[in-house]
Image 1 (cartoon, rainbow, N blue to C red):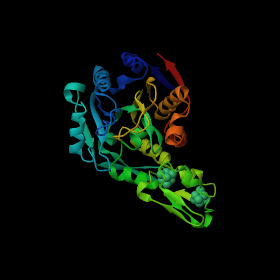
Image 2: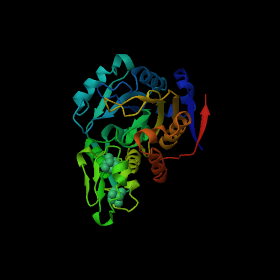
Image 3: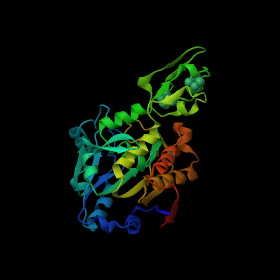
Image 4: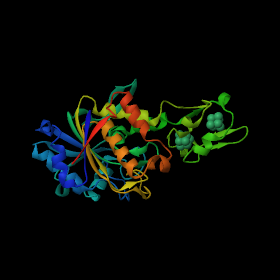
Length: 328
Ligand code: SF4
Ligand code: SF4
């Protein structure tokens, strides 16, 4: 069964990593994949934790660098230049973390489940990766953890847009009974139903798929597929056939993502850290631990079931949702 190691004191990171074959990272160039935070977001992974990871990698003579990709929307991470500036502002400097930062804006097409995902150049090249993911809520996928870190964060802008567009709803008038359920459940209130009309504001849609799941008459379907399925596929495109170690930080667990300057309140007390070599297992363990403290908090607050990404991940062979939790 997949091993997931849980600890609350970050000083035990070395002990946790020692339970995995970190020595394989010797003399490898290792992208440390993380989200360095949108401007004004206070919750992203902090340089102090990143430095501990970098130090552990250096202890086994690996050559780590911090890594992320540009984003599709206009803002402080839209271009490589702007993202590097923001990374510096957020404290991800050579002085603070002991390695440099690389941001990619282009990628290599990789086919998974019949779809093409452009995996960022440095991830595609890497044989060994370290994933550092801050676990928090997310408007589209309920929760963001290891799967979200790669699924959206490991690919190019063009692929990010394709994933967003692919999960938006397509309406089939013939099957619609104008029951209004989709409008009631849409977390963003972009659907309007009257007794004989159905309207939807595409610009305001976040592609969460809640309306598609809620329509029992099959009058709605995703443009391509559920966003959580596409995220799981995209993650597989980034990590398949590579050595990847995952560290999930379950702290500052907010309603929204690190890409949101208004990520909302903290919705769950701090829990600790998890390490695994399986992205599905570590996200399932993260969700289970959070649910123990605040039952179904992401589902209740974001109205999107985060378990879907875990189930889809397992279905496509990304990893296993069965795990053995080792407490340090
Ligand atoms: S839930 Fe389905 S059937 Fe009901 S209004 Fe929405 S699209 Fe039409
Ligand atoms: S996909 Fe989500 S945001 Fe878009 S219309 Fe449906 S419920 Fe609303």
